[in-house]
Image (cartoon, rainbow, N blue to C red; front, side, top):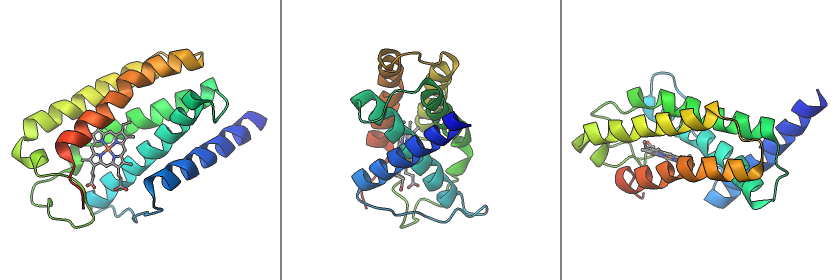
Length: 156
Ligand code: HEC
């Protein structure tokens, strides 16, 4: 019980840190009929989980194996939900930063999602016992964020 309260407190701190870093608390209401709002919410949850992991890696948040594992599982769950959320014809949503390459090069985008699923799945299935192990796992997971965003996101 005590442990879970501590994890929630850590998660809240990390979420706040990430939102502050992103320069916004720009939350979007999730609408079950609108895949754009669903994928934005999924990515924001990935951002929050990444904030917790990065806080631990920097030593701003005490390393906690259970919280680290929960964050990696959250990111893996997000990766599993992505592929259906980019239907064609919705690329002009003004709130979205999804780039045209997603639809122009749909097979490559799908491969990027498949790699994200594989890398986060591997990280999740060997839970890090130390901060060094978390750093090693996240070096692989985090590379996905950068490469996918570079190819498939636009600035608004
Ligand atoms: C396979 C591609 C892909 C991967 C991998 C990926 N993202 Fe994203 N991400 C996107 C796309 C596309 C968007 C834009 C979605 C939209 O606005 O419609 C996005 C948007 C975001 C956003 C902005 C959400 C908002 O408020 O608009 C954050 C934060 C984010 N990603 C974090 C991450 C982090 C952290 C990782 C790595 C752990 C990651 N993403 C990995 C494709 C990816």
